Amino acid sequence: MNDDQTHVNPAYGENFLTQVVLKIDFSSIEAINVNSVNTAFESLEGGFNPAQILEKIDLRIEDHEGELTTNRIVDSIFKIEKDDSNFIEITKTSIVIATTSYSSFTTFSQFFTPILEMFFEKFTVTQASRIGLRYINDIDLEESSDLFNWNNIISPSLVSNLNFVDDKSHIRRAMHNIFLEHDEDTLINFNYGMFNKTFPSKILSKEFVLDYECFTPYGTEVNDIIPTLTNYNQIITDVFEKSIGDELRERMRQQ
Image 1: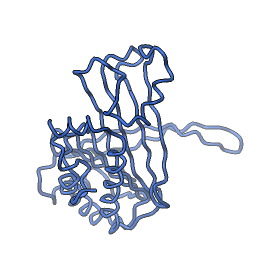
Image 2: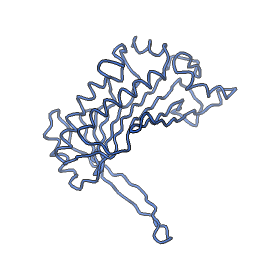
Image 3: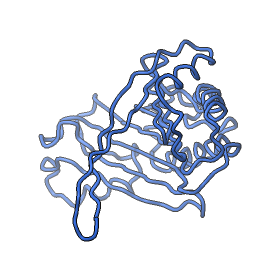
Image 4: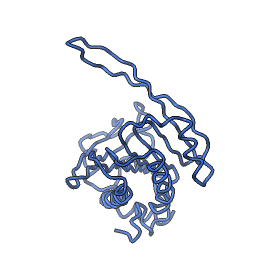
C-alpha cells in the first residue's frame, strides 16, 4: 500500500497508536536468566538498562486420575527498558518488543531487528512457534460533544451496532471481536469499539479502539521472521484503512 510498507501512511502527520507490540514464542530455553540476558544486551549499542526481574503467576488446574489439583506456576519475566517508551520483555519461552511512541514501521523495524538478530544468535533460537504483531489505536476526539456519532470517522460497518440502542446514553461499553483467516498461514484478531475507560460509569469521552493482531500459530524459521513481520504490517495497514473514514484521515494529516 505504501512504498516503505509503514502502518502510518506517509501522508499522515500523526497517529492514534498507544502501543505497538511484537511477540515471538519459541521452545523453552533454560539458559535464559537475568545474567545471560544482561550479558546479551551489553553487546548491543543503544544504552539498554539492566533487566528488571518480574514475576508472572499462573494457576494451572490438572486432572490426575480423576482428581483435580491446582498448581501455582511462577515464571520470571526479564524486562529491559531502552527509554520511557521502548522496552523488551523476555521469558524462557518468548520475547516481546514494544513501543508507545510509534512513528513508522521503518523506524520500529530499525529498533527490533538488531535485538532479534542478537537474541536468536546468543540463545540459539532456530524456529519460532508463534509470531504476532499488534497495533492498538485509541482514537480519542476529546473536542467532540457528539459522543456516538462516528460518521466519516469510523467505517459504518463497525459502528452500526450502536443503532440497536435507542437511547445511547445508556451504553456503558460496546466492544466487539472479529477473528479472520487472512490466508492459510495468517490469522487476524481484531477488537474494536467504544471501550470506555471509566466503565461501568457512563461514557464521557468520544473514544474508539481499533486493536489489530496479526499472527501465525505455526512454526517459522528465524530467517523468515522479519519478512513475516513486514508482511503483517502491510496486512494491518490495509485493514486499518478499511476501518476509518476520510474525516479521520484528514485529522491525521493535519496533526
